[in-house]
Length: 320
Image 1 (cartoon, rainbow, N blue to C red):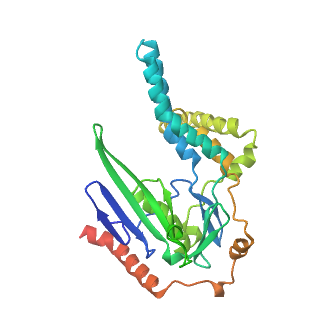
Image 2 (image 1 turned 90 degrees about the vertical axis):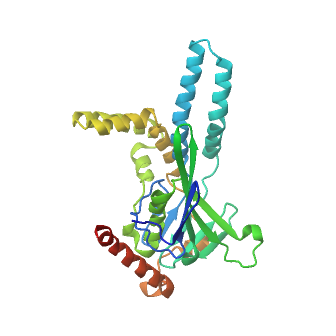
Image 3 (image 1 turned 60 degrees about the horizontal axis):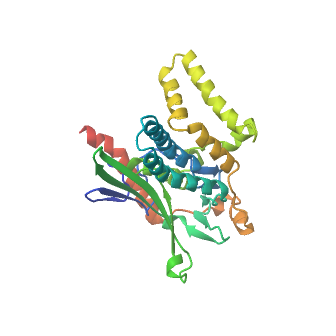
């Protein structure tokens, strides 16, 4: 069964799935795999690419391995200086980038307005574009690399926007947002969060993490200890219920992935998430009477109907 929407191009060590336009169903369930949904209501969906927690969870295992490596070389009278320099080189720069992200303002989200069928693309200097939804592009990219430990696949979802000003300079004509979620079906699931909100409705899209609710329960000063305490009580409760698999996973999340630290930093930076405060965008974000809602183009309507028919017939074809 194929999940790609509009087409696939395969290379020797790469794969590109073109998902939009047209924004037709991919066949995947909407999943917010990167906690990218910052705000959702009946009118608009805010999507952000800032994820300090994901960066921490990537760096944490490498940091643990570096500490073990340095300690091993120190205790075994090995090349301690070289081990320390190598470890600092491997994890030093990523840690500096995390610190930079912590002290820098969070970039504003991209807002998808389903009633107007438009997307607001804001920039840090206060400019913004209003882009027709049906002109938004989406592409899932996956790259394979082969080494001594076998094949490794990395990928991302790239969502692109075209400047509505046809007279804009060449370097300002396009803007794209990349999500390091992996290629293939994972990228399609994240794209479906945006596509399903615009084409199906708010209920078809996950709600996203309630970071403001977590901060409200714990308080700003209690966020650090409260999150760690919640993980440890979770392990205790799973052990009491003899749910050993879930308890083991929480243990791995705490000590090998640094999940409590990642969640704490996410809460600090994204509770509440940044909003779009330009008066014109505030007005643009207000609900419209149903009779004023924008409609699908006939071309997209036909493409969606055709794709939905294909998806409905696929299980029958596979059984045949």
